Amino acid sequence: MISSDLHEAVRQLRAGKLVGIPTETVYGLAANALDPEAVAGIFEAKNRPSFDPLIVHIGQMAEISRLVTDVPVQARQLMDNFWPGPLTIILPKSELIPDIVTSGLPHVGIRMPKHPLTLRLLQSLPFPLAAPSANPFGYVSPTTAQHVLDQLEGKLALVLDGGPSQVGIESTIVSFAEGTPKVLRLGGISMEDLTSVLGESIPSTLSQSQPAAPGQLDSHYAPHRTIALLPHGASAPSLNKGEVWIPFAPQAESKDSLSLDGTNTSAAQRLFALLRKLDYPEAGKMYVEMAPESGLGRAVNDRLMRAAHRA
Ligand code: TXA
Ligand code: MG
Image (cartoon, rainbow, N blue to C red; front, side, top):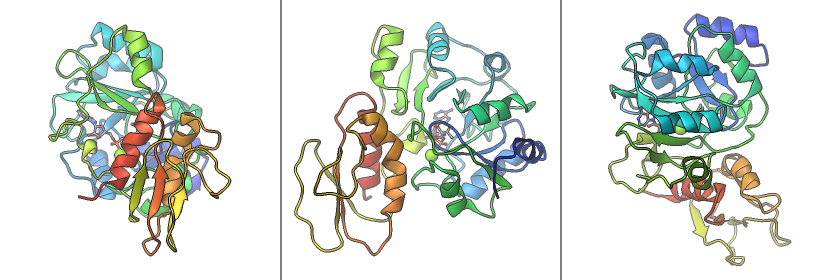
């Protein structure tokens, strides 16, 4: 079921089957984006509500022209600077994209992932791939092939193994649905990076109670265990039996830390795997020190707050 056979992945996808794919952000659960039946299989396997649209993945810049009807200048600048990479851009969709992909919305999210195996896969296929993160709806995203299998075995044809995801958190989503750009989800491209390319900061709609990206529901990414967040720089909490403390950077008193070297890059890479590893229902509270509120740290903190949220 875990395989590195690109040809087999191509065969299965051409037959309308589901394949787990590695990307630099997280693993995706992919199917032919132009085949409504194949796409329906994704929603079923993930137990995903039909109102939550999927991102369409492409392997070459030229594909964009048949999938969307307009590319504003700023969207083009973002593509030129960040593709392939962890950025999803939402644009008006063409007729070619089935309604089930966008949950009936007139716009589609598109991204060119930066993973050599998946880029080759995409370039070997005559269609783009619709792919949400390969986890059951509401759970932590997978960053290894084994994570995918642990939760979706029996529901997909195979998982293509591309090693652990290098970025570790999902793509940043920028929407042009209303003409001017808005950030719908923080992710692998930081606000600072977006600002430096566009020459101005982009507003975000992250704190809306009616989420524009349904994945922004407060309690997304939730593991089963209770998580208590500590502000960045907080000292060690006193622990009861069964409780653990995850400081941001390595500390003598703790076995684990979020970041291996104190950088946000390392924290992002390790976050989801760590939440999974420590997630067993009988265990006590998990104290996690937050990241500094800059660069990728903002996206790490966003995921931590969702993981800690109890509705
Ligand atoms: O890094 C990523 O983006 C990963 C990898 C596999 O590419 N994919 C991913 O997909 O995180 P997913 O489905 O787990 O999250 C996609 C988010 C959802 O919150 C969805 O609501 C939003 O993108 N989205 C997709 N298309 C949209 C659209 N047309 N309008 C608004 N939001 C959209
Ligand atoms: Mg997801």
